[in-house]
Length: 429
Image (cartoon, rainbow, N blue to C red; front, side, top):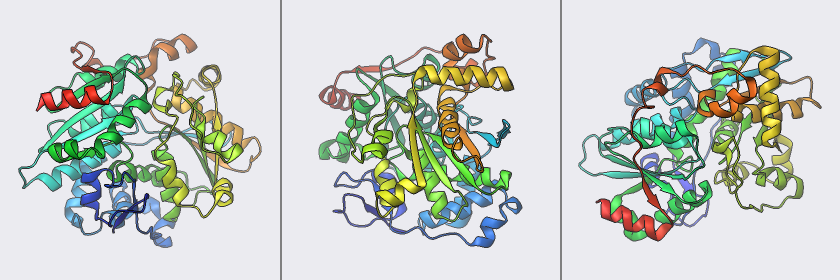
């Protein structure tokens, strides 16, 4: 398997190189040269395979010869050691819970897979890779956990000041060891722009062997396709639609990869908060990001989603894309209203991101009632306890994984802009 740059000006590379570079040298995202559908016999009999076997079949073509079968299965076993429950909420609506990993967010799978792959590639080498990642909340926590004490890696996390929840900030800033947090005066898009700038900064890239652990990195992005296979395995239903809470659009892009591999999914819904670049794109066919607005579903506070270009790459034109993907946006009031209603009706507690996913699903199903709908519940509600507890008037239990970090001291470095970031990263080394 080879990867090419979506900017089109860079030679093709294998999985190891794409992982380590993060972005191509022309600044483009790497994309698989081809996507080969899986055998229908495998797709039709998913219930006969373990989660590890399914993950192996899904990912192996994207790894190519970079990792042998035995080591790849060991990496997958280290990545996937928790469940992905599917909760029946009635009326052909299901919640796919993706928050049962170590940092209670869906990004644990991609972060752990990437960390294990990088550790594998570095095990007999003395080089140090610096993993540079921007986060709107959960990515940084998952990356910090996945890469903690991984041989040959240092991790630098950029997060926006006052725009992540208290628990998310503690997950980012209490690790120590090989993890460093930078608190940025600005939005997630400002953090992401710094990361992208660093990758085309030759001085920085050469000195620190930079790679990214955002969903722009193929090793973080592609394993997210596993979720959709696990849901189909459990549901065994036709006419499936998935509603994905979407910020940087990596998760829904991986879902579309799953569809291209042959998974029987009828439609996708990209559900966003008021950062509605993609819903507006579907309405007017113009991609025009606006300044990012802060919301209670902060992991989706992204107005210039990097992965949308990958989604466009998989469709011939706007007509074929829009027949397969819908996108709707919802505000904080609507989000909290559905949290309150579902708790009242079903005693089920959602986080704000899952709530946005359910809103998008309900909107689509209103005109497509024969479909079975799955929305992704991407983070544990405890991460947004202030909003959730105020809404449902119930005190949430604090999971032990979170209790452990509440007494730890936050440690971070404040930065204003890219020049400040560059100066401080050089002073650290």
